[in-house]
Length: 319
Ligand SMILES: [Zn+2]
Image (cartoon, rainbow, N blue to C red):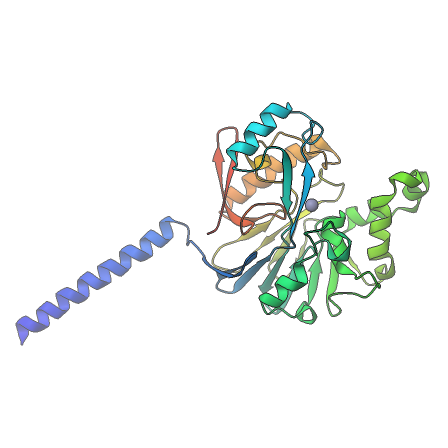
């Protein structure tokens, strides 16, 4: 019996050593998180006390022309697209809002295009249903900036709030820029599109919306970080409390070729110089804090890991 017992003990030791190896390997890969594809374009990332659900709102397409990147020759841009395995004759830009369950809050970050985007967009609610997330269960909507693809989903064409029980959080500098009446008056009618969009969505909420100064913790476990440049008040969010931090960097970059080429200025960046500096600061922050990065226009599940590569960075979506 002793011999048998010894053999069992030996086997147990091997099993324990094996488990330890697996655990250590887990640490070495920074606790690779569990992801579950719930449907096409719907991915849940389980981080223990924090759960992230990436919800594709569809994608837009635009012709690629020399104006898309202001400071790089078209031929270089096409080469970068080819390297990223993207079409080189047009831009396909995905939109991916996310829902984060953190503490007692269910937070939607950005709202997608709603009923106001191009064909192929406005799929957030459909994908929420696939994830079994009831819009009425959203307790907070957090807005990164006021471009239409990020705010139009807040309100339907008939004017109803799509997430009726959610408090709405917006960066104060963003609000102040877009909602400024003097700016509207000084802007020619033909160029008022963005200003009018912001008013349609937010004017009826002027007293209810929570305007915060970037830098504060807006909700337990959700820290706002100023990331100005793409727009005057563009703000990103570090989400803490799970097995891994998540940095929702919104439009710090547009599609992934701007991760590889952080000094390239996409036509949508309102202050190109500030946006360039911000891109590197935010990317370095993600790497320093070992955070997963979620980005509104990033590929695949739109959440993944970031590494330094050459003079830029490399984004690898979670599988
Ligand atoms: Zn955007």
